[in-house]
Amino acid sequence: DIQMTQSPSTLSASVGDRVTITCRASQSFSTWLAWYQQKPGKAPKVLIYKTSSLQAGVPSRFSGSGSGTEFTLTISSLQPDDFATYYCQQYTSYPYTFGQGTKLEIK
Amino acid sequence: EEHLVESGGGLVQPGGSLRLSCVASGFTFGTYWMNWFRQAPGKGLEWVAKIRMDGGERFYVNSVSGRFTISRDNGESSLFLQMNSLRAEDTAVYFCARDAMRGGECDCWGQGTLVTVSS
Image (cartoon, rainbow over the protein chains, first blue to last red):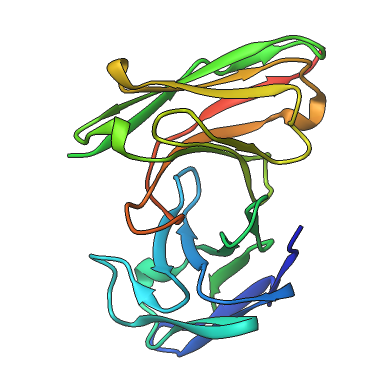
């Protein structure tokens, strides 16, 4: 199984900040990585797919990059609606696996 | 609008069984791979199972293989998860989700149904 390790687990930031969340994989793979946003009591919402493609309707302040074993999600200028928990997920091989999540909190 | 609605969750004793359902609307259900995910209280997301459009291929996370069965009825636009030999660690909110046409990320999710395994 591919283990996904996210960092940091918690991130405190302010509106307008640029933030980056990192996801490291236990094995190298390319392309098939997604980022999800989840708010309390709600289902996840896909933000980024295939490492760097922006899901329709997602603001362009969200971007993804990476390859091999290191992938990143960047939010260029935090907005109030962005405070949530973020998960990376690999879907290159079964079983699909998630990072443990990064909770983005208001500073 | 595209919707997925889960049902069937509840309280069940260890060793018991439960069948979850997920009804789709607003899209052609039979043309999509479908998944079940779960999230234990206060924990992260876990992929559970996936089924091909025609039901001909199924995949499971190791921890449920042999105990859970994913199935579908395209005529009823419905996805199912039969859960047997339930354990306390199966306690979670279970979500059904649709694969995007272009790949394996999930672009449409239900609201989830809570399964509690406890005596």
